[in-house]
Structures are given as C-alpha cells and as structure tokens.
Length: 160
Ligand SMILES: Nc1c(C(=O)O)ncn1[C@@H]1O[C@H](COP(=O)(O)O)[C@@H](O)[C@H]1O
Image 1 (cartoon, protein in one colour):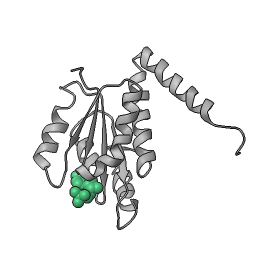
Image 2 (cartoon, protein in one colour):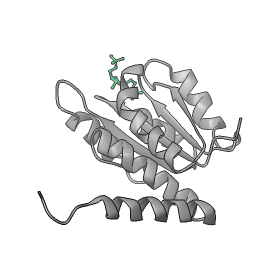
Image 3 (cartoon, helix red, strand yellow):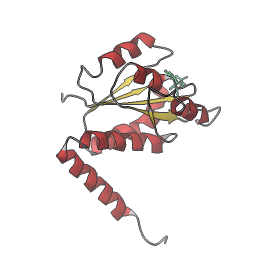
C-alpha cells in the first residue's frame, strides 16, 4: 500500500459520514490518505501515539474532524508540528457552533486551520490538504488545477 500523506482522524465513527467527503476529494485527486477514529476524550493514549508518531510515519498533513467539545484537532496540533486542519462536525444540540468555536478559538501559539461546519468543511479540508501537498508536487498541482477548472466548467451561467 502507498504511503499515506494525509491522516484523517475523527472523534467518533459517527463523524465518518461527514469526513468521508474529505476522503472522497483526496481519492479524486489521487492523494494517499488513511482514516482513523481517534478521540482526545475517549482514547487519549491513541491520540498521543498518533500525533507524536505522525511525522515520523511520513504523514504531511492531519485533518481532524470532531463535534461538540471538539478538542481533537487542538490536542493533535499541540503534539505535532505538521499542519492540522480542523473540521467542525455538526452537533445535534448546537448545530456545530460548539464544534466550530472549540476548534477555531485556539490560544495563540498552537494553530489549527479551521474549516466550515459539516461536509463543506470536510471537502475544503481535503482541497486545502491537497493544496499544501501540491506546493512540492507538480503533478498534484496539475490535478488540482484540473479539478478546479472542471468545477468552474460545471457552473451554469443561467439558472434554468
Ligand atoms: N469531540 C469529540 C472528541 C474529541 O474532541 O476528541 N472525541 C469525540 N468527540 C465527538 O463526540 C461526538 C459524539 O460522538 P458519538 O456519536 O460517538 O456519541 C462526535 O461528533 C465526536 O467527534
């Protein structure tokens, strides 16, 4: 199996429905990734092992999706120098506002690149991870440019 460059982690299996959109984009762009359930709250040792070992294992970007009190991305970012992108998963009680604020409002010094709530955020996390990797991968930069051109092409000018 090819070396994964992006690590998609999520706090619960219930987040997969959202985070699959990130995986789909990476697949479309031919970017290797892995997807794991890792929780700061429920599996703290798994998170510690994952984050501290990520760079050594060859990952280049981590995308972390979680909902509610979403500590996953911030805690991951505290333990690795890799870029961490946070996807606020929509929560039932507060529609993802809790997830968004707990991911975005990091203290200065430990950044998490925060995306939009839900699937749009998961899609954009995939695109942003690809854009980061494309800085040092010309072929991927070309695939990303093609993807964007196809998207532009698909937008009709007239509403009917
Ligand atoms: N926010 C976190 C973390 C974390 O931040 O580490 N671990 C699980 N969770 C979140 O709890 C929500 C409900 O989880 P369940 O559906 O398993 O009850 C999920 O959206 C998950 O991301």
